[in-house]
Length: 103
Image (cartoon, rainbow, N blue to C red; front, side):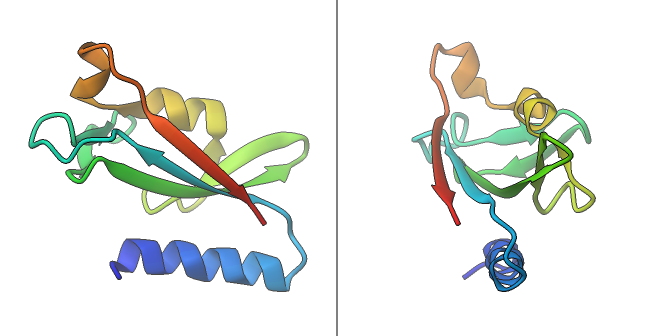
C-alpha cells in the first residue's frame, strides 16, 4: 500500500474514532495510459498521479465541504479541489469517475 493511501486511511480512522462524519472520495480517469492516466493539480502546477487515480477525505466545516489530500493537508473547498484537478482525458471528452464512500 502506498504511503499516500495509508495516510488517507489513517485520517479516516482518526475521524471515525472522533465521531466525525465524512466522505472518502476516489477520483479515477479510468485509464492507466501514459497520457490519459495523468492527473495534475493546477494549484501547485505539478503532476500528482500517473495511475489515473487520486483520493481525498472530505468533511463539513461551517457548512462547507473541505477536502484533505496529500497535497492539501490544511484542507481546500471541494469545488476548488475539483477545479484544480486536470487530466488530458478531459480534453479528449472524457470524465472523471468519482466514487464517494460516506463514513
